[in-house]
Amino acid sequence: MSLLPEQAQAEVFAERPYALAPATFSPGGSATTVDGGYQLSGKWSWASGVMHGNWAMVAGMVSDGGRPDYRLFLLPIEDVQIDDVWFMSGMKGTGSNDIVVTDRFVPAYRTVSFLSILDGTAPGALLHDAPLYRWPLVPMLALGAAAPALGTAESTVERFRLRVTERVMAYSGGAVQRDRPAAQMQLGRSAADVIAARSIYDGAIQQLEQILDHGGSLDAAQRSRYRLIAAHVVFLARKVVSELCAASGGSAHRLDSPFQRAMRDVNTMAGHVVFDYDATTELYGRVQVGLDVPTGTLV
Image (cartoon, rainbow, N blue to C red; front, side):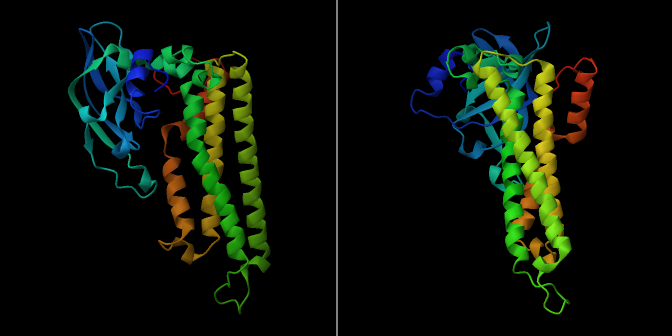
């Protein structure tokens, strides 16, 4: 919200000091230029939190015969239709339903170039002193969205530690799982993975803060590096949760078990486009060998 032009911010925060709005970045809509703004129509998926939103942000292409303009549009929640389609195995609580907009007018001041958000040069970034507003979109999005996956993995390690201290193994004559070297080794390997993930996660944020606090900016190569770090954190988190669930026995998959819920949630998180491990590692490697970044890539 704070990256939009000043007039939009004044409107959004006129009645309350916060705003609740999903932001869907895939260009699922199209717009045409009209007097004072744009006429917008389209359909967007993955609108997390939309059921509680008072605004909605959606991306679309403006094409009036010239070069297409990729923009983000802000609409009052009353101007959108919500399709209740969020029936998922994981992340059930996000309510990431679909948004439909049919021929709605959006004033020009409630739009912003998507490319300016990607590189940290959006109009709103110039209005606020805090360096946070100059963070490019993809590092902010990727690292922010990786946090729940990392936290889930850390909590699952702790739950596994407690579980093995009291779990009596079936058909073992009363043996407790903690006495088995395999369980001890699994706990150690998983702990090492989350320690490594936490270290590179915290380090990336510290590096970004240092660069941006001192007025620096990030080029595509640097932005691809932070997307890589975030994707690797999620990759490790998914690995940890999967391995610990496998080592926790059949009862870990009961619907009241936090183990199976963690696995469903992390698997769903890992499906986010910025965490696609093959695509992200390819992107980083492509930039490192001097090839161009394909148009439309989240970097």
